[in-house]
Each structure stands twice: as C-alpha cells, then as structure tokens.
Image (cartoon, rainbow over all chains, first blue to last red; front, side, top):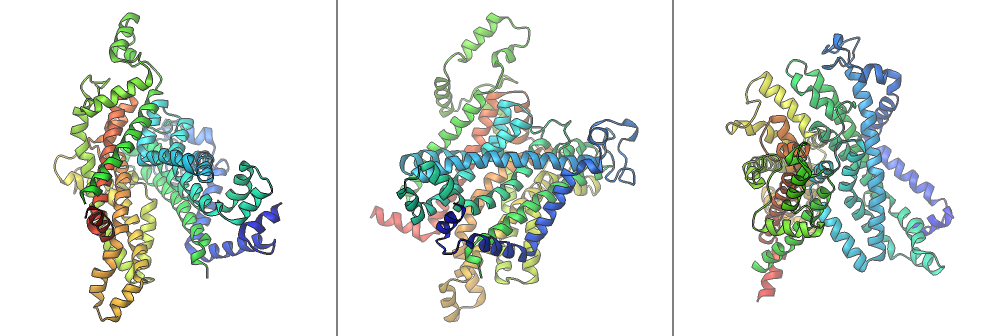
Length: 299
Length: 312
C-alpha cells in the first residue's frame, strides 16, 4: 500500500522515489546554515526542558518559597539568581520551557486536527460546503488572535486547558486554509480519479490519498505556528490571562519580575532570552523547511 | 470608482456582524449570573430575578443578540457591570491611545523597514543584506512586551531619557512606538526585499535598463511602484497584529488604552465592556483594511480601469 501510494503521489515510476525525495529535501535543508542552527537550537531546547529534572528539582527549586535566599544575583549557587520568593530562576526557566513546549505542541495538534477536518471538507466537497465553511473561517481570521484569545479566556477563565482552547481556536482557520488549498491542487489529479474509480470511499480518499500529498505546507505552517503560539502563551501569561502565576512560565515570570527590574535586571533578562531563542528556533526551522520543500528553489 | 468603494463597504458589514456574533456567543458562555454580580452576595432572590428580567437575561440567546446589534447601531452598547456607566464613554477615551500607538508603530516600521528592504534587494548577498536579514530574524523572535521591558529599563530607568510611566506628553509615546515598530519592521524588511527581488527579475526592468534609464530612476519609477502593492498589503495585515501588540505593550508602559481596559474587564467578568471593546477594536481594524483596499484602487491602474470601464 505504502509503495503504490507514493507511486501515485508523484506520478513517478520507482517505488523508492519517496525515500530519495525525502533525502533530497533533507540534503537541501542541511545545506541551509540558518536552518541547521535552528535545528540545533531546537535540540538544545528539547534536552534542557525535557531533561530539566536532571539539572534541578521541580518542587524544591522551582516551586517552594525560600525567603532567606530571595533576590540573589546570578552566581555559583544559583546560575540565574533567585526571584522574590527565593525560587531558583534557572530551574524556573528550564521548567518553563517544558510548559511552553507542552502547551504549544498540544495547541498545534488540536488546531491541526480541527483545521484539517474543516479544510479537507471544504476543499474536497467544494460548492456550498466550501463556501459556508470558508466564510466562517474568514470571519475568524478577521478577529485578531489576541482579541479572540482574550474573549475566550474571559468566558472560560484562566488555566492551561482554557489557554489551549483559546489559542487553538485562533489558529484553526490558518490550517483550514492551507489544507483546503493543498487539497484543491491535488484533487483534480489522476491518482484521485483512479482511487475513486476503484471504489474508494470519500473519507478514505481524503485520508490516504489527498492529505499525505498536502503534508509539506502543513508541516511548515505547524512549525511557524508553534513559534507564534509560544509568543502568545507568554504574552497572555504576562498580562495575567494565561497560566496561573504559581506555574513556572516565561511570561508570568516576567510579569512577576517587572517591579524588581530596576535593581535586579537579571530577573527579566533570562526568561526573555529563553522566549527569544525558542521562538527563533521554530522560525528558523519553519523557514528552512519551506525553502527545502519549495520546488521552485530546487536546483 | 465609487462603485468599488461602495462594494468594499458593503462587504465589511457581514464580516463585522460575523465577528460580533462569534464574540457574543463566546461571552455568553461566561459562567455566573451578572445580576448576582451587580447586586452582590447578599442580594435577595427576588431582587436578582427582577434585575435579570430588567436586563433581558431571561430572553433567549438569539433575541438578546439581535437586541444587542439593534442597540449597537444606535451606539448603545450597554452599561459596565463594574462602574454602571455606559461602556462607550470609557472606550472612547482609551481607544485613541491604542490607535495612536499602533499608527506610530506601523509608521516607524514603514519609514525604516521599507528602505532597508529595498537596499537589501538591490544589493542582494552584500554585507548589508546579510546583516539586515539577520536583524530581521532576531526582531521577529523578540516578544514585544519583553523588548518594551528592556527599553524601559535602559532608557527610562537607567538613563532617564523618557518617562517610565504613562503618557503625560508625546515623549511617553516614543518608547512604546519604537517597541512596536521593531516587531513589524522585520516583516516589512523581509516582504519589501522579496517583492523587490521578484520585480527586479521582470522583463520590463530589463527593458527599462536597455533603453538607458538611470539606476535611480529604475528603482523609483519601475521597481518600487510595482512592489508597492504587496508592501501596502503587508501594512494592512500588520495593522491588526499591531493593535494586538499595542494592547499587550500598554501594560508594560502603564498606558491607559484598550489592552489594560480589556484585561481588567476580563478579570472582573465585566462582559458588556469586553464585548464592546473587542467590537470597537475589530471594527477599527476593518476600517483600516477598508482604507487600504480603497488605496489599492488609486494605486493599481488595473483595478481602476475595471471600474472606469464598467461605469462607462
């Protein structure tokens, strides 16, 4: 099945085509120095945040208040210093990465699923279904995501689950659009006709024949959305509409540190740098993937 | 021409209605009884029931929405649960601050970003190009509120060049505008560069060069004019983002604008205030995009000719 699918996909003769295509894309990606830098940044981010438990203890360093050691500047004991409650900033930045990555990934997965469903339905069925679904998506796109997120948080309240709902709702339309347009380009091709001719169900055609061929732009959008989502998580937490401040999160750390920044600027420096590096990693990977997948830039 | 403008305005109406319906629906999900909130914990059941009836909370959802829109058309957006005053009053004092911030931010990013993008494209792969693309990359990844905090720390708290809080005079706008501008400057540079690069490869540019036009004239008259349309589109898209950024930045610089209003209203479950604030900001953004669409008609002879022919 795997082989026939790829054969149909590219209209290429050899079943090994998929491998070699992946290889050329990979090669082109690795040639792009900035994209490789993004990948390295991403790996460091993953290691530091998923392995945060190796460097610090969640309960003791990042959560428990320790008033004797409050507002200590960066040094040997506390690499990034301590905050107003004596919590270790280094530990909180690391565990904050875990929160951002977790919430970001889940948000992207939810909006990817929702967007694919809507986009696929619109693109595949066309006509009225397409018109109605896409007009609704247009309205959602017309609301700036921050406004949409604020309204949803207003209705549902703070918290991780609500934050994820708020952020996914605002990025569903983008995925829906991309999936729809990819489907429109693939839909008319012969292999879809062939699949229909031997009696494939609509759902099967969409899932097994159309979506795999639209995967490139979707991955690029997912990566770039991830950068954006991380920014939104920290922005909303910064103004107090995201995660509760007890959870170590970069945005809420910055919001807590704001009043101390005059004499303890390190408190706002480290969480901010963490956000910049995380966002940059995803931006670079997204840009790199887009260039690597773009057939126009193929040489 | 009027036909085109009229058509654009008509197209705005369903979008604004759609936005209001979505936000109204979301906010209708808010748990808790507004009547109870206004009257406090100790209110009697009868009093609450009476107020619910008076506020129309017992009506069905669609009816309430239609009533809300009916009120909105005559500029009645209800009273704040918090202050009891019409929400419009407070919004109208705050909206100009947010709009001003967004405008200054966009203006600054165009004035600086577009020339940088042009030079980058004309001198592709030069040191200037590499440096400006690198800067653009860093600028897109910096959260505006953090940049705001850093600028505040350096220029207001350490150097004392600008006020740290509020907007008593125009100097208070400088730091927040620069903060906002840096975020959108990155897109400005990248988009200007890439559209210019596309335009530069067009045949008509080669023709212009072949007929002996000077390099400066080619850039100004042939390349920039054709690259203008995509650049203006980006300004329109960025405006919405800028409004969002401005609302977050306000909290950093303690500016009384829509962002701080919405955040306090959300915390206090002041639903009419949140609803009207979102609506005002969304309409402001749609109006700006309408202006940009109209601007297209003046700049792009292709759109102009379509409607001139039709009216003949």
